[in-house]
Image (tube, rainbow, N blue to C red; front, side, top):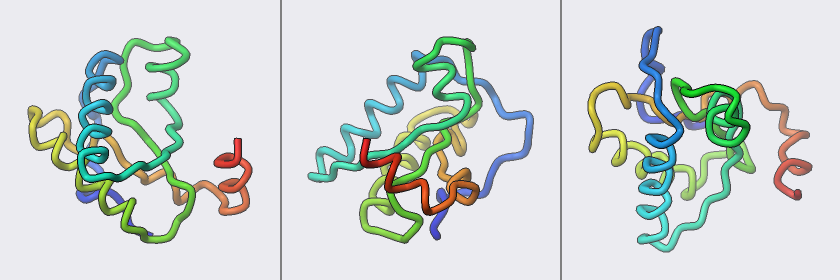
Length: 116
């Protein structure tokens, strides 16, 4: 399994607003689409609470997983796009979007989640 480019940053991590995350996610999607790549991700944790549920004002990152734990060209393209967006922002964006939580998601849950 391949994880995001950099190891997790030491805590506490800087907090990111919903607006900041929306812009960064849109830029990440634009980079992928410019290369003809369409990737579906499932976000979990604080990003969902911040962006969708509005139950918190900020989060430290976007935790995600893909439809497989396998190394794929789409995963590499996504991690490259994430890194590009990260490098265009201040230091506090290091590791802003990562797939570290994929370790804790059982493979048997992937198909039901991605078939919705």
